[in-house]
Image (cartoon, rainbow, N blue to C red):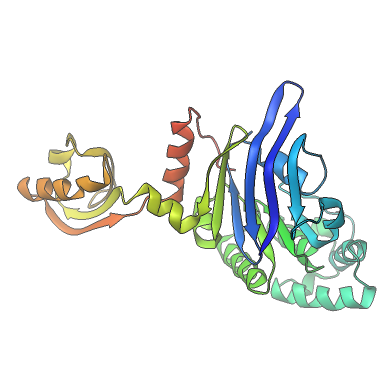
Length: 307
């Protein structure tokens, strides 16, 4: 069953169309990647979902026919621009926000203790926010986003400021929330995280949807158009091959972008004919980053950031 449905949504600001005929649906209990370069229309779309601004046309509904204003208490939102009361203690600021979201004090205190333990921050409960590192503050803001157990969690760049260990911790918590029934909209420019977390993605460019499907289907549609090669010697003899679009050579290891997915056999033949000693030759699916760049450039855009 779909938790969220957007149908033919438009939003204009004067003569500028920020969102043009966007439609997609998000199933309950999934992680949905909302991607696109700067100015693509993602933030406008999220603000319409949260009823901060209203669409000029189209509809946004929750769980069938509920309107945004009737669903706001079931949304948790982690914005890209963070904001915590810096002079308050950690436990006090989480408690304040939890009570705003409808939790009773004792219920909130129980949840705070559990979440601080999960985030390895129990000993910081009585520290002020301005005493925390950026990564710690980021984890506290994540707690304030999810503490009321919302049905829909919207995360904009949730890994910003986190080291690899805490990125893994947050990833695991996101999957735990999904497995417990929460639905997550995940916006980021870190394509590796999207590939690990998302069940389905939507790529927006210039206010329009370029592609929207299950992540696996998207990758299969683009075909296996790259090979990874481990070799001895030099790839210089095949650099001008008619079958190769680009070579990223790291010395004894290379990523080769093919002009056509079917050209891998000709490249392998050329490697053998040129006497290059190949120890591994593996046909690969395109990365989500490659799909993103190709999709945007195909529609006349340039890529600065995949957010």
